[in-house]
Image (tube, rainbow, N blue to C red):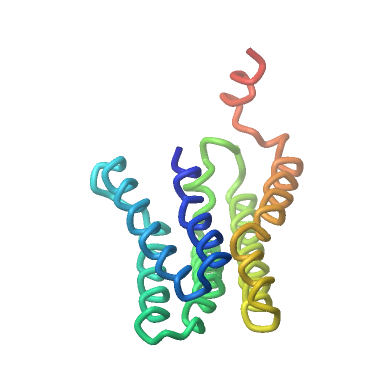
Length: 183
């Protein structure tokens, strides 16, 4: 349910950009994000995780800046910066021996500390790639290419990365999950 809700702002952005332009799409993205995060806040009993706070605050700042100053440059910076923040956070967590991917996926995989650090660095590099791709589409390509990539272009890249990750790590699946899938 959470993942489906998180697509609503993207859909609002895409539809509005096509019909009314990027400035209107920034407003639609802002409103949809605030509504979706209000629903998350209620469902999560008044709490957000750090990732949710980063996305919400940066969406408000960048969409708000875009609307207040009537310049889409601020919205164009949103995705490269969010991906960059995620990449930097993951790299720091691996460097200080507290790999965040261990917290996120300890129920799924059974890895050594070295394995968790490698997985965390792999995700950090994925977010670096996404930041670069978002930057290229936002600042070096047409508005249409940028809107398309921002809305759905990154999804196949994410799916390939996640599928490859599971293919590489399938032998490290948590034994409890292996037993459930065998039943």
